[in-house]
Image 1 (tube, rainbow, N blue to C red):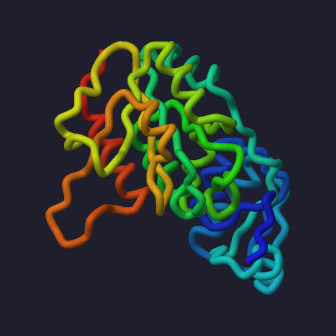
Image 2 (image 1 turned 90 degrees about the horizontal axis):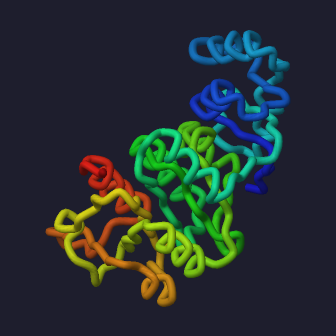
Amino acid sequence: MSEKQNMIYGRNAVTEAIRAEAGIEKIIIQKNIEGEGRKIFALAKKAKIPVQPVPRFVLDKETGGAAHQGVAAYVTEYEYTDLAAMLGAAREAGEPPFLVLLDGIEDPQNLGAILRSCEGAGVHGVLIPKHRAASVNGTVMKVSAGAAAFVRVARITNAAATLKELQEKGLWVFGLDMGGAPYREADYGGSGGVCLVVGSEGGGISRLVRESCDFLVRIPMHGRVGSLNASNAAAVVLFEIASRPRA
C-alpha cells in the first residue's frame, strides 16, 4: 500500500485523534454507517470538524485498501516535539523523566504497538532516529489505537550523542539486549530518571548505542523461542519500570 502520510484511519485512531485535537482537517465516513461510526460522526460534529459521508470505495481508494473500518481523517502533518519538551513535561508532573529511545525500529506496526505501551506506562517521550526508521503515519496511529496522538515523539540525528546528553542530565540508560542481566533484577529508581533503549527488529541495539548504555537488561525466556519481538519486549520492561517506585 502506498500510504498517505496525512491520513489516519480506523475507529479508535480517529476517535482518539479527535479527543487529542490532533489537527484534523476533515473526516470521511462511510455512508449509512452504524454503531461506533455514528458516535464518531457526533463527536466530530461537536468538535466542529467537517465530516463528509462517502461510499465505501472512496475510503478504500483514499486509504490504499487499508482496514479503515468505515472512517478516515485528513490531518496536518504529525507534529514532532523535542527533548526539552519531554523533560519539561516530567518536571511539570513532578516525576523523574521516563523516556524511551528506539534504535532503528523500521516496522510501523512495531512502532505503533510500542507507542501504545509507552502511553499506558506513563512515558514522557519517545526518541526516534530521523533516518532508517519508521515515522509516525496512519498505520502507526491505527496500531497504537490512537495513543500516538498523546505521546510526545522527537526525531534525533545521533542516538549515542543523545544518550550522552541524557546521562549528563542525570538519567540512567538501560538497553534491552540479549547479553544483559535479567530485567527484574535492575534498579530503575533514583531521582535522575530512566531512558529505556529498544533495538531494531532484527539486529537489536547497534554497537555504539549498546556501548553508550549504563546497564543492559534482558527478558529471560523459558521456552524454545529465544526472544520476543521488539514491541512485546518493550512492553514487558516498560511496565516493570512503571511499577517501580522512583524518587
